[in-house]
Image (cartoon, rainbow, N blue to C red):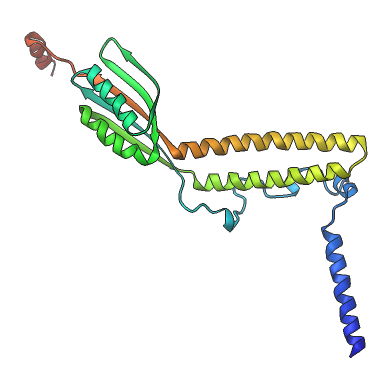
Length: 227
């Protein structure tokens, strides 16, 4: 019985030692031909990479934008009312312009949860001629991008650890170049994620206001003949 227990204990120790050795990657192995110094070998990088259950978003991420055109009786009054609506719904004007022929265009942004209410309020400014609301689900793309960012950061940190263990000048330079390249990509992806989150939080609206044409008696006759 004692011999059997001793044999079992020895076998477990050997298996544990083998597993520990298999997880260790020496600087020589990392720089060798069998393991090229690229992060593609370290983690999934494609956009359709499997997503970890822990990275699933609690709700869908929907990016929305709208375009609305209105015919109004008095352009200046309608414009001032629009500016007041933007302030009321916690939005802001990005740019706007008004022309001499009774036309006003404004590009604005409002919090996404207030998009439909402000569109309904804008419709009260006059006669609606067109309205379109575009919705785009970016949930999957955001999750995959977040997973890519996580993997890149893990690889960067591993390379920094490897750098601290390396003494050869050519290997140090090579690892530093790789770290810098990966860090540049990390910065780009973080910027992309910030833009995606911004497109979900805020919704842009293109507003076009056209002053109605008021005909005189002769004008109405000519307009009727044209019809």
